[in-house]
Image 1 (spheres, helix red, strand yellow):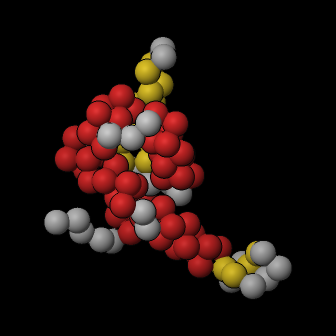
Image 2 (cartoon, rainbow, N blue to C red):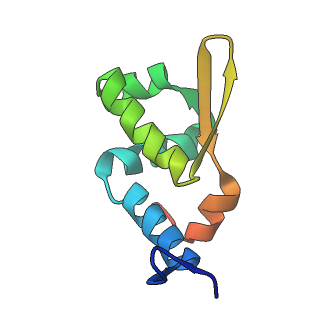
Amino acid sequence: MERNRKNIFTASTLRKARLAKALGHPVRMAIIEYLLSHEKCNSGMLTNEIALSQSTLAQHLKLLKNAGLLRFETKGKETSYFINQEVWNEVEIRIL
């Protein structure tokens, strides 16, 4: 078992904690719920839906991307976000 962070935590434990942190905020859960029902969207659509400033939304999107829950594609100046289905399947939760 590979360990890091001074051999205290396994990579698996750190990965689970990163996913839990990403899902542990209502705004990030709202983003996930929106994307689960819309396949993909841009930040402007999310700003209108969730009623947050662009900069606040960007911070939440960054955390979700860093956890691996979101993927994105950029075309010109527009970035589209969508669920990383492989990672989402790892999480094994169901949003009603």
